[in-house]
Amino acid sequence: MRKTFCCALNVLWPVAAILVLCALFVYVFVVPHPRAGAGDFRRNRARYEAIVAKLKTMPRPHSGRAYYVDRDLDPASIAEKDVAYTMTGRVSLMRTDSGSVQVDIVTDDSGHLGSYGYIYTDGSKPDGGPEAKLQKIDAHWWSYVHSD
Image (cartoon, rainbow, N blue to C red; front, side, top):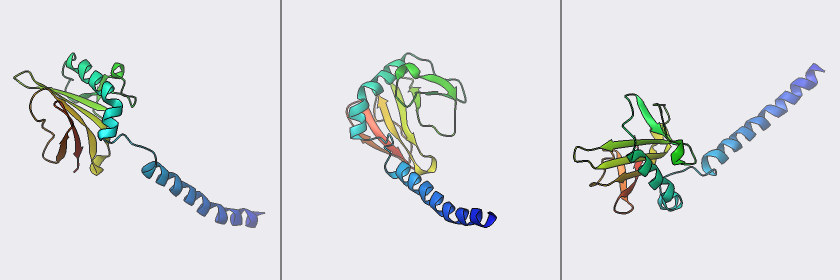
């Protein structure tokens, strides 16, 4: 009986490992992730604009905290939370002394692999940082890829 059980384990563990690797491959390469790009922006533009409109009415978050929106990009879900390691869903609001507004919407943050999102500004070109690659979408919107 014990020998049969050990033989079954010797056969099953490679099969389980292959299944886990296949699931990981599907998650990484097949499941769509919300990366910044023209198709994503056109599909979700109304939601992004609603997020900007709501953030313009809100005060700056407290120190060590940030605004987050759920994965469905529902503006009603915007809430102030503690800054987390993963910043996907984070939306930030910056106001300049002249009164112009910049809103950053992080659609995907993969840590050291980079982050993706959109920046709305009613002023000049946004400040995405030295590592950010900005691409203008229209008069107020920019997409960005930020790599470490």
